[in-house]
Structure formats: structure tokens, C-alpha cells
Image 1 (cartoon, helix red, strand yellow):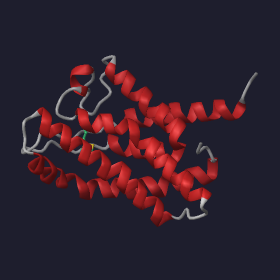
Image 2 (cartoon, helix red, strand yellow):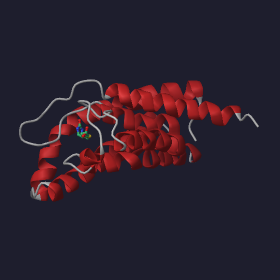
Image 3 (cartoon, helix red, strand yellow):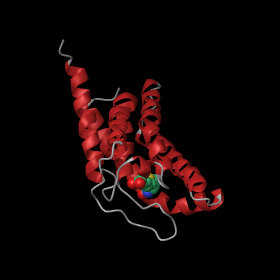
Image 4 (tube, rainbow, N blue to C red):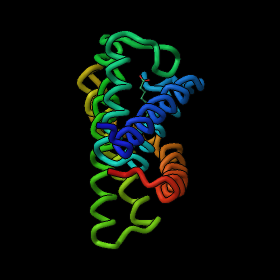
Length: 185
Ligand code: BTN
């Protein structure tokens, strides 16, 4: 039977995956002292969770990572393949898979408790979309390139200002879209 709501959410998940791919077409900013660039693609990952919620957000990010894994050049700079996922930036991408789940569940909980406002949502997007990703990425980077963990964590501080701006824009855009379209689930 045709399930309109379910199909609508799947279409939004596909659109979100497309947005993540488009953000990957914008050039990265390489940093000389660390093998991890500044990218915009992680804003699409944050948006998946806050706009689509845990289930459909994970479908969009999981689908994107699957395409990258089979070798499509969808990561910033036109990269793809298992070897990229196992490279210095692999930890960020593994963390990306869990971001929609964590952000989506937090927003749903806030809604259940009637506590959902811009600031609390922003806090959760920072915790799971920025700090969780940057810490996971640092741990992986440290193991992968034999860098002391404190140096890896310290060098990741360079991402925080930009990632905070991305988190802020994510919450503004997602809240507008969510209340207009109402697809979180
Ligand atoms: C890749 O394309 O290989 C993944 C890049 C991961 C970059 C991380 S995501 C969190 C942090 N913020 C950035 O702008 N860059 C790093």
C-alpha cells in the first residue's frame, strides 16, 4: 500500500544525501600541520540529524557513507573508497554515522519534555555534531598517524570556530524547515 508519510520522509532523506554530496563539491581548506582539512560537508551531517531525526537522518548519512565506501568520489576534493575511510580522516567519518542518531534522539527528547528551544538544541548539536566528531576524529588520527593524543586534540581546536558557525546555521535552517515541513522521526 502507498504510504505517503514514509515516502515523503525517504524523499527528504535522499534530498539530504544530495545536499551532503553538494557540500562536498565546495573546496576544502587544507591545513599544513594536520592531515585533516576544513570542510563544509560536516554541516550536512549535522543537518541530517536536526532536520530529519534519528531514523531518516541515519538513512541519509549511512547511504552517503555507503556510496563513498563503494568508491564514488563524493568526499570533499572528489575522494572515495575504503582506503579513504581507513585514512587519517576515517575517525570523523565513522563518527558522522552516529551524529544523526545522537542529535535526533536529543531533539526528540527535548520535544517530549516540552523543552525544545533554539539554545538547548544548539547545545546538543555542538555536543554531538562538533565535539563528539572532533574528539573521535582526534583519537583515530592519533592512532593512525602515531601522533600523541594531546597533540591531536589540540590541533583539532582549529576546527572549533568554523564548526560552531556550522552548528549555529544548522539549527537556524533545520528549525525553520522542520516546523514548516515536519518530517522529524
Ligand atoms: C574527509 O573528507 O576525508 C573527511 C574530512 C573530515 C573533516 C573534519 S569534520 C570535523 C572537522 N571540521 C572540519 O571542518 N574538518 C574536520
